[in-house]
Image 1 (cartoon, rainbow, N blue to C red):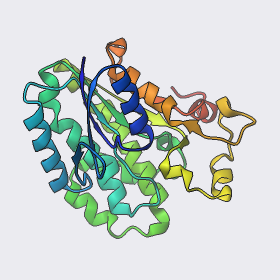
Image 2 (image 1 turned 180 degrees about the vertical axis):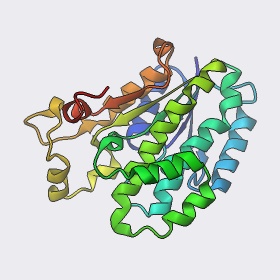
Image 3 (image 1 turned 45 degrees about the vertical axis):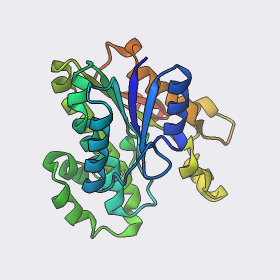
Image 4 (image 1 turned 90 degrees about the horizontal axis):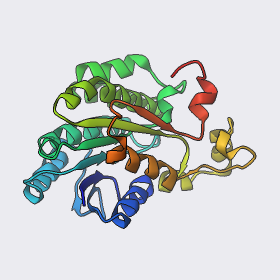
Length: 257
C-alpha cells in the first residue's frame, strides 16, 4: 500500500485520518510535538529541519502522500500561530516535494473555514503570503496583542489556502497534486475545553447539517475528506480548497464558489 507522512496525527482530525489510513493498510508516519513516530517542534525551523532529515533517512525512495495537519488554535501566542499554522505547513510540504516526485504523489493541507470569516486581516494575509519571509513576519507578529489572536489564526489559514492555490500549477507540472481542506467547528481536543458560553457563540450561526442540534462536526468527517483528496480517487482534483463545514460557507457566501 501507500506511504503517508502526516504532521499532527496524535490527536483530533489528524488522529482520525491516521486511523482510517491504517485500517486501509497504508503505512503512516506521524510527525508531532509529542506521541509521534517523530517528535519535533514544527513551530521552529530547527524542528522542521530535524523532522525532514529523519523522513529522508527513513524513505529515501520516496513517499506517496504528505498530509500537513499540525496546527494550533486562536488561543495560542500570535507568533506560534503563524509559525505553525502557515510556515510549518509550507516548509514541510515543500521539504518533502522531492520525495513525492519520486512516486508522483499528492499533498493535503489542513486550512480552516475561518479563512472566510470577519476576523481575517487581508493586509496580514498579504504580508504573510507575499513576503514568504518567516523572520520578517515574526518581527511583526511578536508585537501583536493577545486579544487579536483570532485574526492571527484566520489570517494565517487564509494565507495558507492562498498558497495552496498559487503553487498547485507548479506542483502539477511535476506530476503532483496539492489540495486543502477547510474544516468548520469540529470536536477535537482544541474545542472540547470550550465553556458553554463559548460553544453558544461558536454556534451562533447553526451548522446546516447539524440544524436543531448544539453540536460540532465529528473529526472523522474532516478526516474522510482528507483521505479522499489524498487518494487516487481524487486524481483530477488539484488546487482545491474543500470546505468541510456542514454547509456554513455556502450559507454565508452562497454567491461565491
